[in-house]
Length: 226
Image (tube, rainbow, N blue to C red; front, side, top):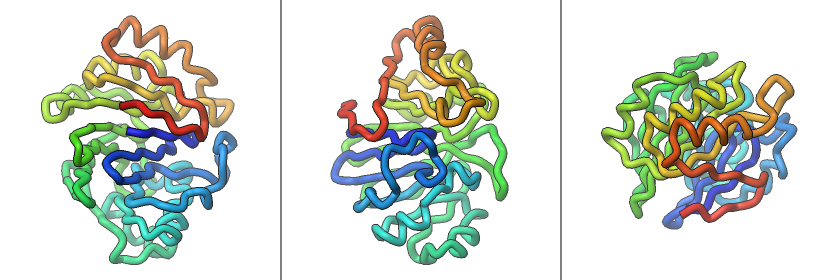
């Protein structure tokens, strides 16, 4: 698994010959290390919810690369209006699973808000078996414990910024619920209202989930994490 962080909740995951983008927020993202046009190949773009800092340039990237768009069914009309072809959109709902080229994509709940429909997270199982969870924007919720009953999570991507999502302490507890092997914190440092570093999360993780390894990402630099 190769992971690239573009700031905020914007990630590229590459494994088994597949490339996935999640919440591709480039324009307006002060931490984005490159423009969206640098994304020249992509198999799937996943949206957790329709706030502007998560939809980002999903439509433009799908149009430029031919990627499939995965989103909540209620968000499909909005993405069609933005120019994504209907045959490129997989509209789904919480609890559902879709498959793209052997990649299994499970949409799970998140505790947040959305302009249309409800927010979501995703649990991705790549053809080779690697399992990654992107929580989307969320508060801590105890049903995260159920995810480990169905999935052996290698990597969790979790917000730590507070204010709009769970904070560092709560994200560490989430790791204990998930039983994830590794974690990458997200949704921090983008704007002044959010947490500006990962120090509190690192300390909380040692206390709450010592078996989970913290991965520190450098913006725009791919990291081999498996």
